[in-house]
Image (cartoon, rainbow, N blue to C red; front, side):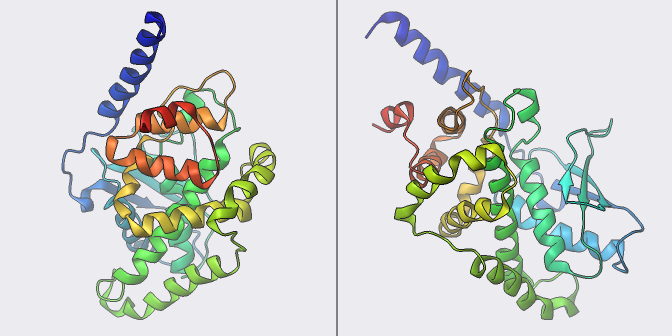
Length: 289
């Protein structure tokens, strides 16, 4: 192999190793300290801010148990008159603003919407702007948000059976499970072996519009099932969006950035996602060998 090519390849791998080391140095902050929520006092249609905070802490805790943070995440929760979202611009003190469209005491919907936005935060959604990569691959980030929503609902449905925010809320656990089950039941999901062709057929539409929720959810449900088998792989999403895109902004390059940014124990999971969608990458294949 040409000496110049070898040096370029080494530089490429060292770059990602450095990013990984800087991005995820967990200092052992207790779960209870990793999420600091401030809920707007009014505008929730009769739901009490303190109850909302307890629900969102429960949802956030389920995710952060699997993808721990090395510093607290501060979030201001406000009602939205349109779609749920996390603002790109943060407050001067670093606080995120998350907007939720739920009104009333619909705790499953609160968990679902907040789980999605927290999924964006822990997977470094802001770096889409930093890296100037546009929206070509934003559909996958939206899919990750959907995965987070499904995951927190599944875990909360179990946790609330014995340890809900309030003792008398144990009876709400089945409602969380019912909400999750309906989302999955109402989604027509191709079998794993059919997903590469499904993605090939739907890739142009996803690239053009990242908010095709039904299609995002199809991919999300498959990834959710992977994480149900091994929840520790949530750690991989702490390294999403950390790499630098190439001039094509291709999804192949996006997955390569993720693969080489992720720690060794998460690389197999990233490759499994690539395989699910039938995405071929010589860089990943050569590294696996």
